Amino acid sequence: GAMPSIVDAIGRRQLEREDGFLFDDNDDEEEDNDGVEETKKSKTQTPKKFDVVGDIAILHSLPPDIINNEEEKKKIGEAIMERNKAIKVCAVRTSSLTGTDRSPGSNGFEIIAGMNRSPLVTSHMEYGIKCVVDLSHTFFSPRMGQERLRICQQVARGENVLVLFSGIGMDAMQIAGRTEAKSVTAIELNPVAMACAKNGQRMLERNKAVKVAGAAERLHLVEGDVLDVLPTLEHGAYDRIVAPRPKEGALDGDLGTGDGGVQFLEALLPLLRVHGGECHWYDFAADHELPNCERTRKSISDVCDKMGYDMEVIHVARAGSIAMRQIRVCMDFRITGRKSSC
Image (cartoon, rainbow, N blue to C red; front, side, top):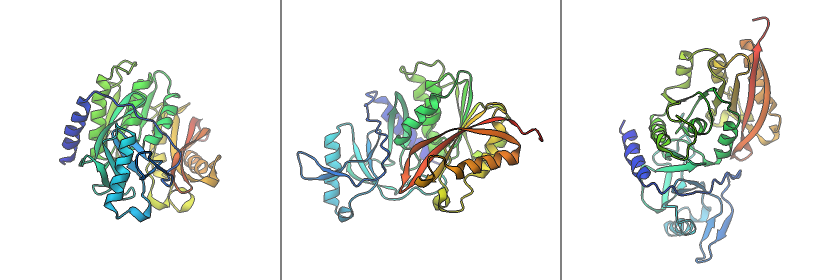
């Protein structure tokens, strides 16, 4: 549709201002916005915790007593912008993430101060690598920055890496721009996120701070449904697969009957190198399941058993909190070979 070209125009306008603000990569584990503090100049209480994506401050909630008070909301937004001159827009999330692309939607934000920007697009810098984000129509969390770095640190020279559900492409761009991977393939279904990723790839090409040769050329963006694309890829061709799968509504985690993404596991396992291929599998767990995450471990080992692979769990990492007592975890596991009976 028309969306990607809008992203393109706005993305380009953002990019031409090569003033690259430095933002606080505040990977705060907390998702709540209860903390409030009074700014020195005014008596306005501003939330202590909010996400900054590019030049946009995103509040996840507001105190109930001011939700319908336009004036108070504007004061809060202006107080946040007063404290950080790089912030040009202050928005409050008004809907939870819905749909397969986990985006807030066109009406997902209310701008309470600053520029009235629609769609809500910005460029965001993370550890020297820039991406374009359409906050209304894609899913991006600046809190995953440290997790992206953790994965980069595990990528060895010459690896072929596959990133599923790659969104606006930050995970894939970090790997392409920060490691000596031979190739990084990223699959994403949402066309708006893909348009953002293509913008990011163009910026990666021009980014003087990226020291690895040919970062943008080694990045391959594939638009499509993971379950349609995976069967077309070569078996055993990938040394590493990053799978930050989307949350399947309330059914995920230990709260219900979500299949824990079994269909994705079944589709990706054959693509891993049979001896030593590694997967970073993201799941949603309740706090009491940590640190072992037995349920997640069992869902992986059951699929491996069924498909005739031996596997070992290397590490379980906490990858930022999602909501009350629901935590995003990453289970790194390795395929160690085929079962002898297969």
